[in-house]
Image 1 (cartoon, rainbow, N blue to C red):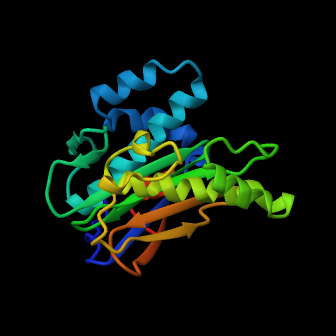
Image 2 (image 1 turned 180 degrees about the vertical axis):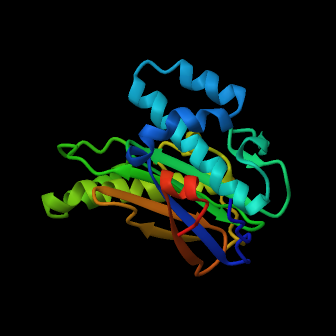
Image 3 (image 1 turned 45 degrees about the horizontal axis):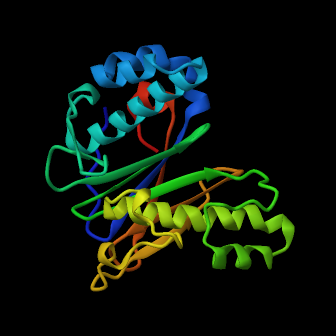
Length: 228
């Protein structure tokens, strides 16, 4: 296990995890998970969901353990009011997201952070997750660009509410973050990301112009103990 320094203020490490490439190693990874994680995996109906749940949970643990300086299975998490997990230690914050074959993990020091990813696929101009005004904006775009931009709009909101720690259910009827949850004294940065072909993502942090360090995790990294 190669140690990694907690990002300095204003810096975010953004990890992209190829879950498809980790499928074959899931059985070995399961030994490093907690009982609750194993129980959650066992309740999943389809094998591909079980395998990828195990792979991503281990990947998150493996990455975070490099910053903390412990074994993956030794990490302890606490959960906020809306279910957002944090490490049971000070000085490091993280947030994770996944969609199909891609998972992502954002790590920073001592500030909120939120990240969200979606796979781009045709929605036939049905964008129920956007407000009426946003849907009008999307329909003005060329048809080939609509779905990707609509999903980017959603990932920006999702990343923002995750950084706030309030959960997507806090969005109001117009799909906006209510004023009481959005501190006006904070300068927020929301950055669009392109983690893999066919996927869009966004990162939200409560500071201006974040320095983003992109990293990739694969099963071979976990085995070799090296970090790219």
